[in-house]
Length: 253
Image (cartoon, rainbow, N blue to C red; front, side, top):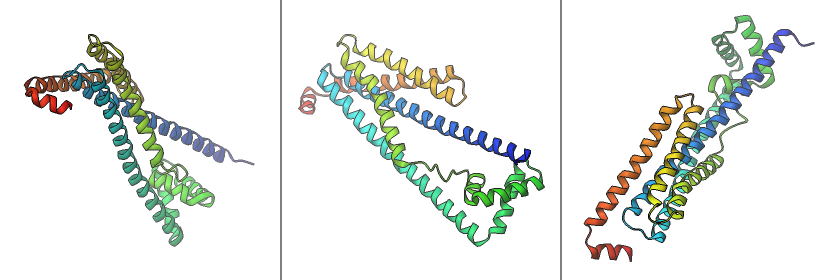
């Protein structure tokens, strides 16, 4: 027979697991949105800058593809290194906890009781729950309560790298397609409008996922992207106008 307290405790554990799973999915989604945002802004800056110096379709396309590929690989490599470091740290902490459980189980049991009391459980209840958790899976309990780590759900560096690469690529395709598909007379404004809409969506989405004011975040995101495009467009246009003709020819060759 299941005691009421045990049933309530099991229900509480299930609710916590569902909430933790939802938070993990939201974190992944938020990271994907931010990766797409990086792809939009950086690639838009490059193609707008090149468009300020030339109207040649192939030159703009090559520059945009180069920005997309380099940015996607850079994002993936950076995410892989970052998450690998995080995973190494988590595995080291888990190994340390496993050793402590083996060498001083009584002290670890008391420590677990302390964590449960800090969460609001009465001393007697905390002692009972700590004993049950220890008998069921002591390492999992200590990793979750003490370290905030799910031993069965360590972050994969390869998955994080792939997600960053895909998100950046999808974002970078927005300005790249806009500036190459529209004719010369409309490509700049078409790219500006397309990028503005995309940045508004990513800014609003990231704010909603982070429980922040969405309108302010969308406007801030759009302003940053437009500033990046404006600065690169003006800078490259000015450089193109001030460079000697022979230098421009040699660079293009």
